[in-house]
Image (cartoon, rainbow, N blue to C red; front, side, top):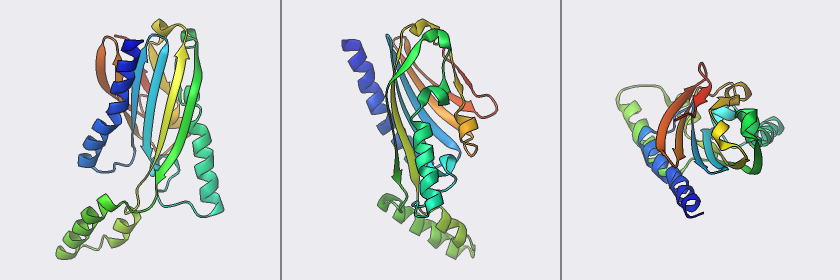
Length: 198
């Protein structure tokens, strides 16, 4: 139990570490992030992806069609075993799943960055203002999952049906933490299987 709590604490800290990295890399369309902690029979997962990857836009949903797209995406993101499929032999079942959309309005911490970029565009005579306006708002989908896998030794791989469900998504940066250590991977649309074997 003590080890489970420590691994879960590490997973809880991963988004903060990843956020620092993502702030440096900026908001990158096409790239999601998935943190996975496997301890005994418990698999905890935290997932995030830009709104553009999931619904094709990042502005605040106001039209009926956009609101419907967000709701459908949230419903899909609430089914982790259909997005991130594991071998049936692992006997995994969902214990908890929660998906939410964050953002959609211009974030204050990006406002200065965008103002600086706009100033640079003006200095260089560039007319990227329309493009800049499209990228001013950043929304992200976040999801947390807890799975119980009766036979965790059978967790040899994970197939990312996520790419089929969300055609705009191109890759997912994955961090996996087990009692044997932590590893980082990148899973791409053209090779959608993550090898979880040691």
